[in-house]
Image 1 (cartoon, rainbow, N blue to C red):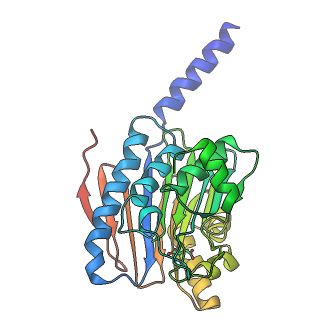
Image 2: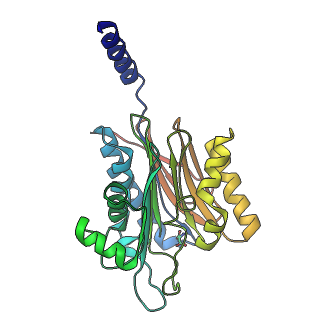
Image 3: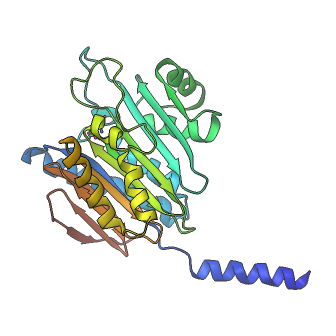
Length: 294
Ligand code: ASP
């Protein structure tokens, strides 16, 4: 019995010693972003990545961290999600979001959500409190009224326990048809997380991303031994070559390697790793600043 206890105590100490360095990586949407919007995007991704990292620093879960980062961007009019959502052809907002926990592959997704500011929080509640995985329209609204308060944005995080989570949220495409559903709430297209491999959040032309199952294509490449950066580049380029539309993706591997790639003109992104914030929006641009965690 005591041997048994000693074994577990030792294992606990060893695990603590080898705790993962928590990392959070986010994007603020891919597309033809005009020069005048670059500063707003940079400010927004920096605020959001810090909001998510604070949760990880305090020992919080990857799932809570990705939600916090996405909520921050949903509040920010610089992004096409939550408050900044684009309108459909009838002039209405219809938001979509999904979240996934890599530990047990549990998911929560919502689509055609109106009248709430944080679709990602409803998706999180679907994950934790609903027997279902994906709720739409009226059903999502009813569920939100019971359970939650409420460019495309996304976040991928790994917490100190090595658990991975991913969240993605969007207002969809500008001028979309009434009832149109894109890639963002679709698990495997907009979002994927698996503790055994890594996590991916995507953005860009929804109809192409969903045909190509872009998030899961990246995960499959990594499962077969490709590193995060190469897998992200190969899958995004493969989708664009095949379907002639653009996209972007952010990826974290289970060991904390980062992949960022986009075939669109621009994509804002940021991550915090080893006390630095890295960020960018142009191709091959990596800016960095010191990040002192408090
Ligand atoms: N992928 C989103 C959609 O098609 C749009 C975006 O990423 O900006 O709904």
